[in-house]
Length: 283
Image 1 (tube, rainbow, N blue to C red):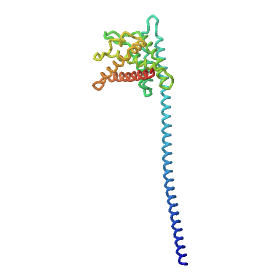
Image 2 (cartoon, rainbow, N blue to C red; image 1 turned 90 degrees about the horizontal axis):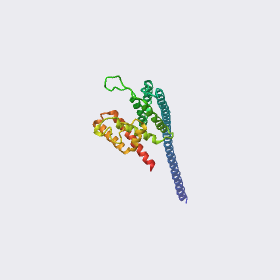
Image 3 (tube, one colour; image 1 turned 90 degrees about the vertical axis):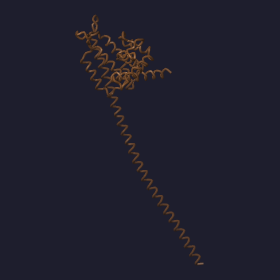
Image 4 (tube, one colour; image 1 turned 180 degrees about the vertical axis):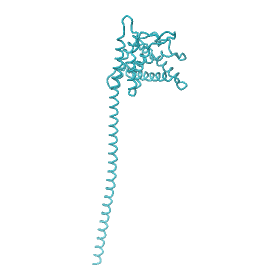
């Protein structure tokens, strides 16, 4: 009987020890797993916080850059528009009702405009540069020219150039407004793109590609900017086709007339985008 009790007592003690050992091992495993998990979680939190702070910093830098860019862009637009108006006002002051305006663009004001253009060029996109190039070219057309006769340079009446720029002023201002998020008339960009295209196809001589054109797109006898735009708008499809052909012609052999090629490609891209946007609005 005592032997049996001893066996039972020993068995019970062993079972208790086994149970205690299992509990201890289980608890140790739990603690180990929890500790490892806590370390990994803390490491993940630290890494995540670091990434979040990095993203916040990048966003802050990006917002600052964007803010600085738009601030400078607004200042650039305001300065350029003001200078165009100033040049035209001073230029038109020389107009004589009887004789006309036989004065080129005021040279000092022209240089000031070109200086502003170069200064702010970084903040001007293709559409702005295209529009402003029309102003620059109008200034150039007003300068005296040598007719090859040996006589002093001749000066044409510049009234048409002043009127040309007056036509462009509100349209360029509208384009600028659109760039800074203010409501703008999309037709103004179309007008400027069409005018640029008309000037390009009529301003060069490459008879292999019908430049300048002889048909409906010819503006040889047209001086008024609004009339030139009307010609382009009435023949938009033909204008785009001719501009594409001109672009392909200038692009051959690696593009050997770089300035013309750049202007043609720039205007073609903008004009095609304008037409696409206009078609999507009218659907």
